[in-house]
Amino acid sequence: MTDLHVEDRLAVQEAIARYAHAFDTGDVAGFVDVFTEDGIFEAVLVDQPDQRAVFQGHAELRRFAEATMREDVHVLHHLAGVMFDSTAVEAPTSRATVLVTKQLPDGPAISTHGTYLDRWRRTSGGWRLAHRRYVALGYGAAHRSRRAPRH
Amino acid sequence: MTDLHVEDRLAVQEAIARYAHAFDTGDVAGFVDVFTEDGIFEAVLVDQPDQRAVFQGHAELRRFAEATMREDVHVLHHLAGVMFDSTAVEAPTSRATVLVTKQLPDGPAISTHGTYLDRWRRTSGGWRLAHRRYVALGYGAAHRSRRAPRH
Amino acid sequence: MTDLHVEDRLAVQEAIARYAHAFDTGDVAGFVDVFTEDGIFEAVLVDQPDQRAVFQGHAELRRFAEATMREDVHVLHHLAGVMFDSTAVEAPTSRATVLVTKQLPDGPAISTHGTYLDRWRRTSGGWRLAHRRYVALGYGAAHRSRRAPRH
Image 1: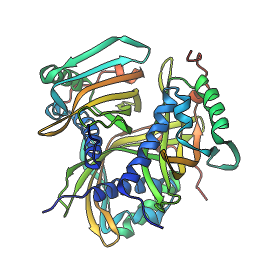
Image 2: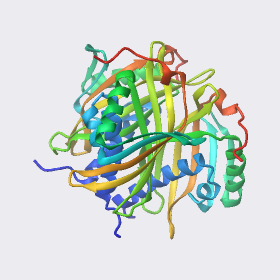
Image 3: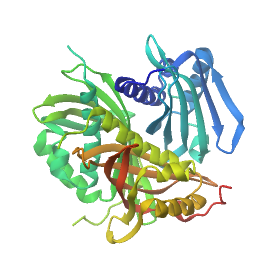
Image 4: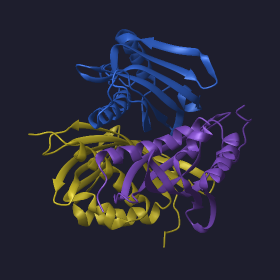
């Protein structure tokens, strides 16, 4: 077991940012590509760890992205506070804070906020998410408001 | 064409942060210094790319900063999610998420949110912004509220 | 006087993130451990630098953390825009933007926002905060709302 190099740490930070920009620009292929082929995205509420939404593998992740981005247009994922819980090169884990804002007719509003708990895997194409768990503190009215489709 | 070193990536990240702290402390000279001599700052709304506000060169940027900071006191630029679209050393490009909060009489409010699309140039004084394009998702009531001048 | 290495800069960035995650998960020991044994945390309002709340040393920091985390549950510290004002290895100083969100019954709200002004010291356990000064732009209604204790 060796440790992550500086380049690896920066690459993981960039992959976290890439997720945000892919989602926020409606780039479904870019979003899916942040994950490994068998990658998992799951979402839970902080007080209800047993009620999960889970999407595993590129096909499910693509359907999730297509459905979500169709309704969540004009959102931004503000991802900060990246910290590694493990820098073991086989399966580094990190966390980051999440704030999602959305443009409503009367201005910007917070849609949801929480923490990403991530496990990474190195692939031939670079670092990918093997597992992302979103622990949400909660959601706001902006999360439920529907906008016209992007196209 | 060679690639950016780790030091360059961190320097660009710091320059992005320096822009925020200069603006938020009313440091006009520091704000202008983030740009190259012929640097451009432009702002567009995400759905109206043809209606631009553009400021080019240190003299225009200084006038922009003086006018804006006189009215926008007690604001914070929260800049996160830095990602490089190109790491070509001649003209690296990056993006970052933007959230601007403002202190109003009844508490903090979101003034605007969007994305910075940046093109960088290396100068004798370090990395500078050759071109920053702010793509705003929108603005809130806090953006239009006027405060007393700082001084 | 020598300069900070890339590894040091990343370690300081991580310590900034660790503060946030320790606070937000109610990890009192982890929070205290971000500071040196004689470390200081102080908070001021931007327009009232003379009215300070000050906590010095691990014992006081622990009492502060216990009291605060008992009331401030379901908060998130979004820390971004890290920039070094001094990279002198004996006492590097940095700043970062702060946004604290809180989950209220009707959704997420901004509790406070401002800037951390930090002075660091290298210890046998890594980089620690010798002095953190929080300059708050202000607080919102969410800051004063009380929640049920975590336990």
